[in-house]
Length: 234
Image (cartoon, rainbow, N blue to C red; front, top):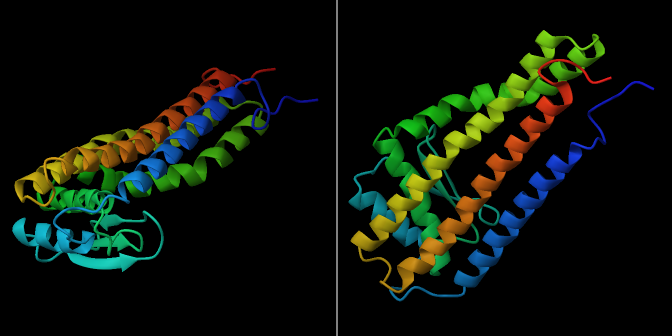
């Protein structure tokens, strides 16, 4: 029976570890957000109010503010120049919601300032999407063609683009959170007691990006272990 490395294999433990880390990070951010979503900010501003205030004070009148359905689906789209706040965030006056909204405003500030890592991440999006689509078909083709070293290495390289994208994402997310906390403090939106609470929410969210990068690294490591630089195990 030929060896087929894409299903169960001892190296699958790396995938399981990656899933466990990602699952833990997801549960942690949900529990942290839930905890601080029950703490109302003393100023009584909604997350929407906060974003509008930041956009005006930061000289970003061209950024559109829209709602989007879902829970914690908040994001800033640099191509459309639009910041979207989710159902669970936009009308909330909680410390958690304000922290998340300010984080997305931080991305808008990055866009305004031509932040290099944000530009690099945007440039990597189409390349990464192509890599995710093409990697496994090329790996499978290389495998069935007698372990073609060239095709297998190309497949691994394409798969590794996801890891590169996630590594570039880390400074983008950390910087957006840093900007968020700074603007919340400078504009006196949150009190000295509330700022550390918002920071905990943003730090928990950052763990999901770290976990995703670790999981991708483990997946790439598995492919290297399986194919040994292009040589198929027998």
